[in-house]
Image (cartoon, one colour):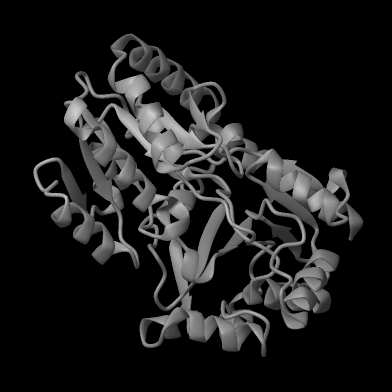
Length: 373
């Protein structure tokens, strides 16, 4: 069985590591733009020119604005259709991406293909800001054979948008729980991993740490890149925190070591009108690494961490600081949350478990499609 995993510019190893251990008989090949986030060395990748790549040359907001009001979206893949003939299943991401629209149009003229959509979106009726984008989104819905969600919250959003529940499967996306393992001895550090952007709450976390840094032994480690990098560095220098706060850029192949160097993980995401935390792969990685977790109660965070962490109703600096103190001052509680987190990761977020469930879904869709011919 041949599967085309289409992710455009957003192709990354967080997700694709779950596909490289499918059983024999499954050939998964990825489709990306010319400049994806990351490619998986175990999977053959096809690259195509995309408007999204222009964000390397021009401000992304400009490229996105012009694309949304013309094509409907900047994530197209030029001439991708020429490489689709051999694939049985066309597995794409959210329906509002232009490459999903390309696949839907291809399926319309090739009805024997299976179009599988994986929506990350958890806010119903989101990404309908222009008539072109809305048109793309609902055209893809009409052509979709099935939907695979990574969270129940994404499934609920689909149902509100009119998709029948019997066309939706939910499988929790996993990670390599043999690589992301607890360290024998945790260091007294607090860790943040994520984009340095406003919605990720990095500035609130820095302000929270400033409030407690004189009363705790824990240092703060920040791993990530983004538009707020200069503000993060400025905050560190202004408040003379160079010896307490470090900013790092780490390749994914070495990311597991970052989690092993800390005992508390914080994801203080800030919900907006059009965005909330859709999954938080870093949460799964932190759980597998046996960390005590603090996360904002928005999007799918509660669903992902369950009772294996503390939830922030209002992820502002003072509230984050209080939650941090609850853990930095209570070693016993940290150990309890750590054990709970590791156990939850082993049960729900093991990529081998995901691969087996995905294998069964692919086989079910293939058999169903074959019987209809």
